[in-house]
Length: 129
Length: 134
Image 1 (tube, rainbow over the protein chains, first blue to last red):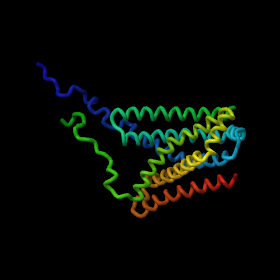
Image 2: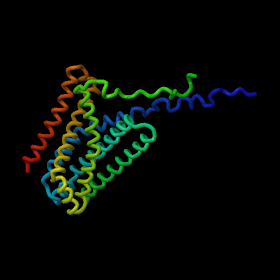
Image 3: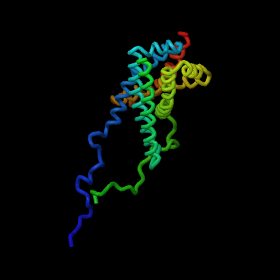
Image 4: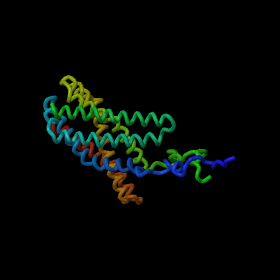
């Protein structure tokens, strides 16, 4: 009778998913990248909002049809929403476990993606109409 | 034995419970950084509403303007501005730490106070500018 080994998995199968496979610091790095980008972008965003504050509908639209405010907004939305998605992800994994964690992570990514697309669509519509 | 999958019999370590340590300013600002971050997460909905309203018709935009101009809207906007500045300064503090500076006792406390006071000062300053330019 053949003697089977205790573990049928290959040496590769045993070590897979036990450590970072070249992408272990991606989220951490992306968090720092978006943080750094958001320092000037937030200042620019606040500046733009102060400019828009006392304008009426037509004047707001005229301002946002210029390239610089539109690009600033697009960059702020992109960096900001990637940043907030990563941030909420770390909050979820800190406080939730089991199936709730999985659903929360799924909801977080879907909500962030939809919000980013809606904001960017509206910004582009303002810029090109 | 050594090659088997990590044992799951022992529970995973948890964060220290809040009631174990007395409150320090660095602890309070760490919690505030997370809370402001979560608040900004919801606050982006306000930005989305603004952009969608501005890109649609004048009636939609005036509904947004009416809300933002209302007492509740102003309170929310003020909170949004404070959360934004507090989180911004907290983030800069994290960059200082990432570079390996400001972790010793007096400096880390001063940085925490600077985050708290700086966030409030910047919010009031921007609010003052907003009302002054009207």
